[in-house]
Amino acid sequence: MHSTYRYHPNELYDLTVRMLFKNRLHQHERVHITFARRGKSDRTASLRTQLELARQKFFEERGIQKETTITIQPAHPWDFVGLQVADYCLWALQRCYENHEARFLHALWPKVSLIHDVDDKTAAKYGRYWNRKNPPPDPEAIKNRRI
Image (cartoon, rainbow, N blue to C red; front, side):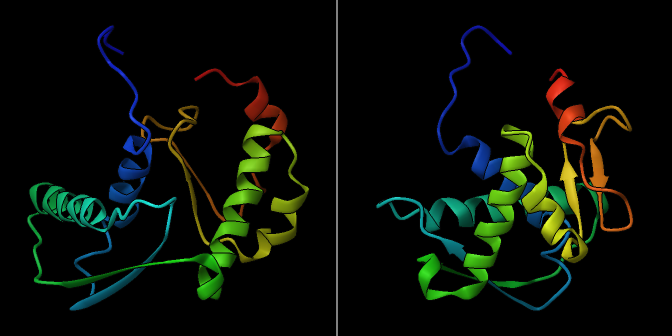
C-alpha cells in the first residue's frame, strides 16, 4: 500500500464485480444481471462501468470479444428469491471467514459450485479455489493466516 492510499467504500465491491464477470461476459449474446440494491444510492451506472472494464480486460488478455447486450436491474432482495439465496450463501461464507464458524457453510456445501479465495496465497499467487469436491475452508486455518 502506498501511504497516500485511502480506501473508498465501493472499491472492493467494484473489484469483486470485475473479477466475477470477467470470464463470463463473452459466453452469451445477452446477459441479464440483477444486483441487490445497497442503500439509497443507485449504482447501476458504476456497475455497468465495472462490467465494461471486465469485458475490456478479458479482451486484452485473451483477444476474445463478443458483442454481448448487458441488462442491469437493481432490486431489493425481497423482490427476487435468487438475491435472497445469494445473500444467505454470502452470509454463511462471511461467518466462516470473520467469525470462524463454519456450520452454516457446511450446511450448504453440497450446493457450492465454486469459491475463489483471492487472499489465500498458500496454493498459488492468484488465490485458492474451493468447490464441493474439496472440504470447505477450515475456519481455524483462516483464523491463523496472515494477509
